[in-house]
Amino acid sequence: MNLRNFFSKLFGIKVESKEELMKKFLIVGLGNIGDKYTNTRHNIGFKILDEVAEEHNTAFETEKLGDIARFRFKGRTFILLKPSTFMNLSGKSLKYWMDKEKISLENLLVITDDVNIDFGTIRLKAKGSAGGHNGLKDIETKLGHQKYARFRFGVGANYSKGRQVDFVLGEWSKEETSQLIERLPTSAKVITSFGTAGLANTMNTYNGK
Image (cartoon, rainbow, N blue to C red; front, side):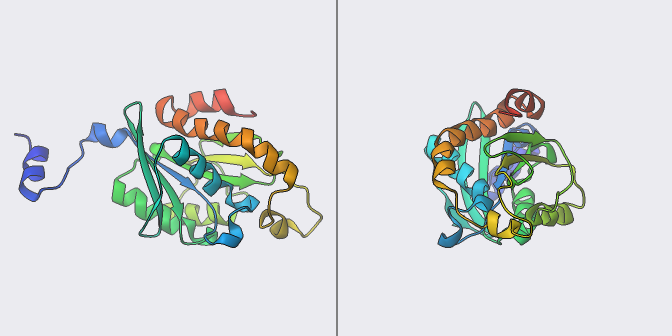
């Protein structure tokens, strides 16, 4: 009996092997909690995770620092996290769940809105600056670096000077809502592709779509 199995039997807890841990992914959708934020552009991270959860017949449960849903797909375990710390403290929740679930950095993906990308356009990057996004800024602070994968969903920049905050905290227009019906399933496929095909292949398949 190896040490992992010994401690599992002794303490009645599952000790995951390195191989098992490498097949576990943390997908963090950024947003703000509360009904008034549900349909805002800034909450696209939450909205995409809701789509993923629905497609894979799982549901979110409120746990420490966030709502969590889990599912397995093609031998991988996906943990979906919607932080309950509000956007500006997203890193606190992310870091807690990374440590708790022993998620490796390459198995972390953060979903966020981006005003510098046309509405509905997908862009994945392996690393990069926060670009003025407060949620990403806090994650960078908590992790101590910028080297984590992020999935940016374009919300466009249809706002006048000085009105960016109002725009991202505003609700989707009727036209945008209609187009999201098609964009959300595509975004959900990005998540499972990240876990099964890897970041590079997923970037090649979906960037700019």
